[in-house]
Image (cartoon, rainbow, N blue to C red):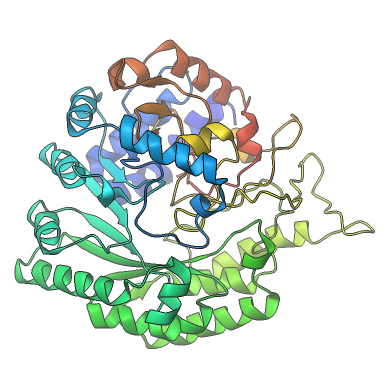
Amino acid sequence: MSKLSLLAFAARPSEIVHGIRRLGLRGAVVHGVRRASATTERALLGPAQIRLNPMGAICNHACRMCWLQHLEPATLQSLVKIDKTERMALTDYVALFDGMPRGLTEVNVVGGGEPLVHPECLDIMSEVKKRGWRGYLMSNGTLLDEQSARALVDMNWDKTRFSIHAGDRDTYRAVHDRDNFERLHDNLSRLVKYRNERAANSVGIEAHFVIQRLNLHTIPQMFAFAHEVGVDHMVFEIIFALSPQFRLTKDEHREAARLLRECASRSSITSNALEIAVLHESEIVDAPELPFEPFDLTPEQEPDELARELQEVGSRTRETEPGGASVAPAGVPVTTSTTSTTDTTDTTNNKSCAGTVKARTTGSCDPEHADVSPPPQPARDVYVPAKRCSVGFDSAFITATGDVMPCCFSDEVMGNVRENSFREIWYGATYREFRKRLIRGQFADYCSRVRCKLRSFLHD
């Protein structure tokens, strides 16, 4: 997409009206400034969102689909040591926040490990809210004691997504390798009760379930659990895994879709169950041979629209040569999967890391916008729809040790916030060169190893 076409697209009256409705007048203006900056390597504003990894690897659980469980013991020990000895402290985060350029609106506290293991996590979150930014936390919830729950509500933390992945105690223990189901139930019930007593309606509470072979039979119990504790929203995802034992069969996909549809039709809690049912029903789910062609899973899309979009992509991937080799449309490289002896599957919540040593040793794995990462392929042209990407303009990722990366898949370090302010890094030469490559469509190798679902602001 050329610079002129980007500007022409952004200036269409329908786009302007849509932006104002979705973001408000001020938000639409800021959004427009960011779009304009995407025609040059110089960002005109700071990122709208940053993602923090307070802990790169240390977690109090050992979920079987998690990337940490697929590392060599020596590598995991190394990551744990880094978390213990080199992780950023509260003073580092305060300096980071003080050095942010204008434009930031949201801070995501996620992590390769469990964020609440960090002894100053709640203080870090408090600093986020003091500055008027929206806060988002992803946690397994088992460390959210009464004091922590009260602190979260009292600071008006905007949204917390709790990784549950089960509907009963036995399944929870099988997935998490910990017997904390009852503790989680009590923690969430207490949090919801305190939130409701305070009438803190802005404090959002979500339940997160990664559908996999170990738990798909408990989908009805997942809905029952969510109703019982009183969460606001349920988020379902399909497990993506290179390791064969984690892949669902077609019959399991069909059963998961059936249960999701049936339960969603009876539930009063909002969820993305119908969208995920569509994914289960499509034959492209969990297919490593997919070309690198992400599709948007936007809140505005109805299930029927999703089905049509998925069928369109799936029809192109199901054309095969003799022997089963995938045939992509002309000019579209195909990423194929090979089984390796060492499974690098990442799932901070089921997703895979960038497949690079740098990504794994820094714990840089995004729990929200990742798909399967096939083993590294030889250097080649990378197919990216319309050659657009928002990283470097509206978002950034910061590891537990302070490295700034364009995204969680990247193995390129733009700088370290312990050595320079984020403002200096964001407007510095390294980031400018990175943006220049993006604008020219010169994508890095790691871009071809993932199928990112993060919506580009150039496409909004």
